[in-house]
Image 1 (spheres, each protein chain N blue to C red):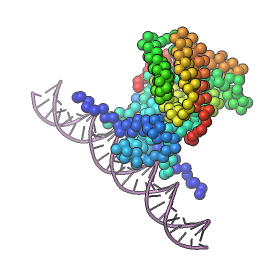
Image 2 (image 1 turned 90 degrees about the horizontal axis):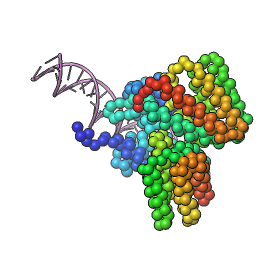
Image 3 (image 1 turned 90 degrees about the vertical axis):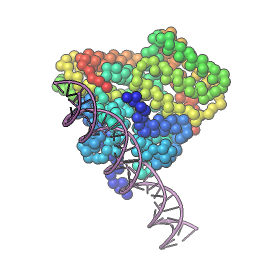
Image 4 (image 1 turned 180 degrees about the horizontal axis):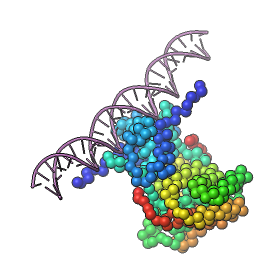
Length: 221
Length: 221
DNA sequence: GCGTTGTAACTGGTATGCCAGTTGGATTCC
DNA sequence: GGAATCCAACTGGCATACCAGTTACAACGC
């Protein structure tokens, strides 16, 4: 048996696609969605779409009101604070744990990422910087080999991506500092100084949070 | 309009009920479930049951194979290790953050919990001890007022409950030590010594993990 | 007796139709 | 003209029917 095509449930496709549309900003916060319309757009029936939306609601990406409609959730200021607290807890612990334990392959991945960050910074490519930042944080977590943590980090990165693409500041100070902080964090991890790496990570995340919260405009639940 | 009964979707009821049945051990790991049978048991149709199961799969409580069946997931040794790593990250950060910031009402809640633990210990009521332990850890996290963290903690507590009810050791050493550790942790938080509280919490969780992993028998995914 | 094969009884996944409830706007009545 | 009202066009939630795929077992052929 060649196993043919993996059955690949429609609901999985609906989930991935919808999550992508929301995270990418194509469905910005506040957008009203309709099961029927989405079903038509995704060329499937309501059922798998319904299941996917239900899961997205559980993960906080949409809000469903019976007999009313579905609306894409944004993050409130409180949500963002909560979000960064969780990231601080997880990521500080991560670098503390990783300190002095990186192998060569892992180090190479980090260095490649940082080099690309520096290129993107020079080219003023903010989209690439954003992607590389997310990748860097996920990369560090992935080295733990902990699926629980990875799942959470991927969700957190997606949620913050949804917010950050709507923050347009022309100031280059923060991206420049951010790349430098990444270098310092990796250096501290490499040096085996877990406490220092954790402290740097905390400052790094705090700065990221301030950048998002300061140019304050901001959405709703 | 008196708003009558809140609509309370059937799928929410299905989700809560199924999660309860799994966590409580009534559906032990490895149990085969059937959408139709569950629908009959819960007195509703397949649809809400299907949605609930899909969400439970996303949260790791069950495993669904198309055209085959649904099986209640247990935790592998790796799952347990991952689980405790995440708890260490979150809970150590929590007590560090809480150190020196408890108000009187919060302190009272903690003290009441500890008193009940001591009573349960004296009465040799292991079920109560288990419940109070879970409550104590959730209590601490709840003081942060962080919904992200609370949601995660509730899921983690449920998953570990599912495992721990299957560990029957007659040794009273661990429960006794556990209660004492809770007292020390609260004392450290109260004294405002975050680093010490975090260190105590790490040891406490490590001991809990060892207790589960040592009497090793253990299940599958 | 053993291996093969065919079949029937399941499984979850999906499509469809209907339901109750909400909403917004046109209409009607003051 | 303004306000209350009613109705039609939605919404998501649920039940049902059907589908494809899997599995286990019985019957058959060797």
